[in-house]
Length: 117
Image (tube, rainbow, N blue to C red; front, top):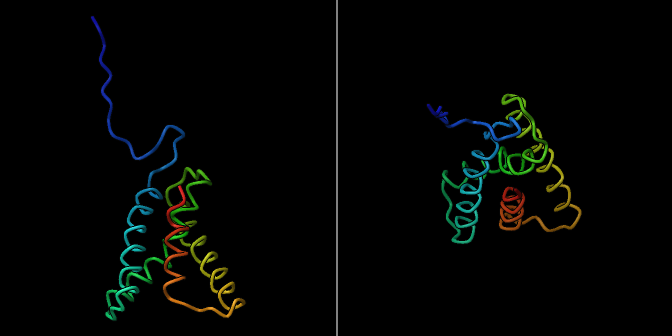
């Protein structure tokens, strides 16, 4: 008699790390690409503002927190927000020091950081 083990889909990888950051990262990449398209086409709407806010809040953190391999889901989500805030501040400081504040460059930079995997 052979035993069959049933595999159930999990929300964790082999190391026990939740996939929340990867899922949020995929969504953030979409926000980033949409934000770049809105900036390139010079569309001014509330949707562009909200996409930018969502990209700033979760974009860079969702790309970088995966390297930390945090096992706790709540801590992982909290670190996404914290890392995003830190990266946004550093990016704003760098743009101020270079005297080149540009919406397109910031959207592209944040989207590239979000794409780290």
